[in-house]
Image (cartoon, rainbow, N blue to C red; front, side):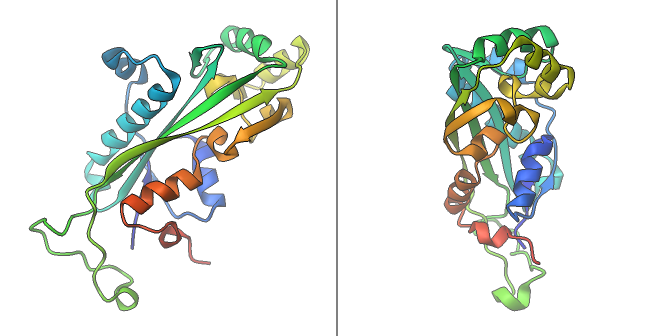
Length: 228
């Protein structure tokens, strides 16, 4: 049976996968995002999202628990007025950002990085016998050795927000730990007028992008659908 590990502690990402019927487990990395960005000096929001997704995926892929699995790491960065906005963490930063975002638009970049930790056909280890041996001939497919990524971006258009609404939203605590200081699948959805692009990317994981990456590892996303 093919295993997928999500290298993220985001409840929105794991819920998105669950709602899409994609069987997975969660294993959180201990990546220091600020240290990674400082090391590589990346400032472009698009590239930053991919860099952090790769760092998370590779950190989890190096763990013993990831052996024999596929690992997907994700990270989101909001681009507004040419600036990269990650999580605001404080109410003051969130308020300043949201006042500027009111009635305007920005681009949410979500980086995805996939690492195939399954043994390849060239490895000396014997092929693994799967639990679905009778159905697939008795041998699970060898790993591809793939390690690759992609970014899914979407333009987010915000409604006009008055200061009282912004303060009430911030008081819920929801925007403080979200890239760009907003969500689309929670309370923040009330302030989003429209999205140009994949809405799943705004949530934090593009299912169609995941499907494409899995294809490079010779895995169909249907192989990960949960049994009813």
